[in-house]
Length: 261
View 1 (spheres, helix red, strand yellow):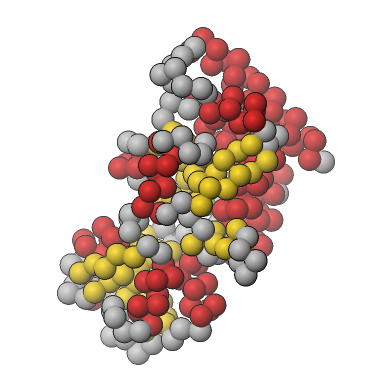
View 2: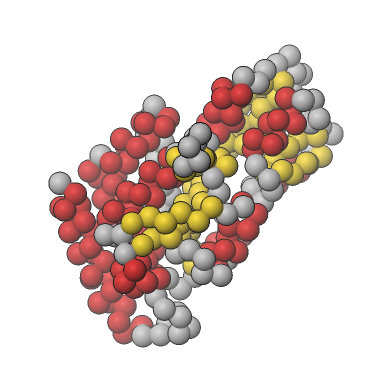
């Protein structure tokens, strides 16, 4: 079963590689990322590890989550093993540009600003952005955020969302830290992905609820460094294969009870 998946995707990779031979040293003389994966048998993945249920460390200090399972499924289709490189969120794109890993699979929202620094795969999921606040709060919608102190994770698109609505912003290294301050009354609310916030609230037993409608429904992509066209094409081929054969739906249902593509 797995051999067929590998054969199908690796056949596409072979076509991609052959077509790219004419490009020669188009990547500025640096070794091609896909060739590095093929020669080493390892796909290095930049991941935050602080964003449950997408990616986090469990009680055994092992990485688990939707992003982790997606990473492993892609590596399998590239005939490679996965090597995760846990990286703080605010430096995860810089680590990719510096060559510390070949791809980032860590719930990166696709934006024009980020696309100037990296290339994105086809979207691999969509999820809703929501406001979280203490039970009994008076926030009814985004119109009520003006003047409030809203917590967000540093380097996320949520900061812009809060500022655009007139809120004061406090930044954190992770959503867990933001939710902890919210629970302790140090801030008025938190903006983050709905499933992420709900997972933290449930795990820690906080008296925190979602308020108002979803702010947005952004698309997340897998990031590769600029000029790595062969690797990007291989990742997209692997994603398409996973969605076609049911692997993607199985992983998504495991973590969210639904297909979030």
